[in-house]
Length: 473
Image: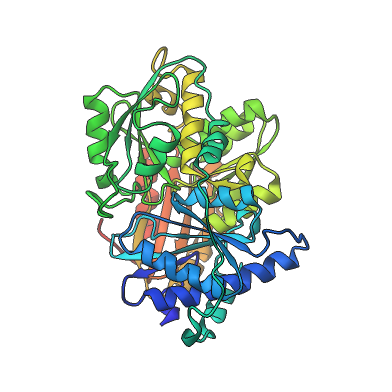
């Protein structure tokens, strides 16, 4: 049964079947074994090396799963530091703030309420995924004896770290006496707790900020809309609110508040690659010649703007495990992903929805949003190329299709396989694309960009013939 809940980057499934409290206890045992051994191998012995931070989201199943997970950790000779009802980036902060062996957030992120799961982080909030320790946790959990549940000593501490967390996030926020009016859709998720704690429910903790709140009530663990801001349909209420209330822009968070999407003052959706470009140029003004890491599916405009700002563009593989590693290895200052994850050197190279919002408030204020310009005017020169968005194709022979694609376009441009297949004919023919395999389904995912709409349409149709049957939206 354990094999059904372990995914590529985390642990996630429906509750109470197959994911339940007994399984959570086993996973707690596996986490304790892996995280303590990993911390010991790091060679930095501290009093907190046998401690693991545990937080949870607002789902109705989260408290009981948290308790079972915590019992597993304690039965594994560990100490649990329970930080309570928090957003996922809070756990990343707590691991570093307390210098613990690692941490676990009980959450299923943007999945429906019948789902739950665990996001595991190592020392320094390094992510634990397949290939970076999750397979070890799975094996250790499978070998546990459930009959020993509750046999360990109770080592449980409760910590309220909101003041320290707020201080950390506010280091990224400086509106310098300006005024902004923004709408925030918390998706009935953890932003409904985080935003009031950090920024104030209506922005009263940040001078000059006014927040128009939407879907902040997370007390029932239910969602008015799917808590996934990547789906355009889930942004409709926010778009209408921004226009109706004459806001400078709007923000929609996902379920565990580690991702966000932006809509401009006209209700237009801002691509996360375009937002990355906006924030990257600001970071490069304050961190000369630094590296910026970005999702390899991002617009060419992002790479061009990084170079223009005298930064070093670093293409990264899709996924927070890879993005965090790339940011650390490059010693870059900032990174962004099409999924809405944004990564910060000064946040332990980890992603944070709260810090992304704080940084955007700073940039918007400095650029004159709300007074001399608008969010749409800031984004317009960045969104200068035609993009297909992600298009899915059904294909049972994904590897064969990718091989055919490479053979068909060999010699026409630069081809690499950093993540899927990227064909770059931008300089010669005015287009480029990336095609990646789904990890879980017989799907190929195409992202294509061109200098003109006509070229984009032409090349999507040309490449579609190789990829299989197009999946309707």
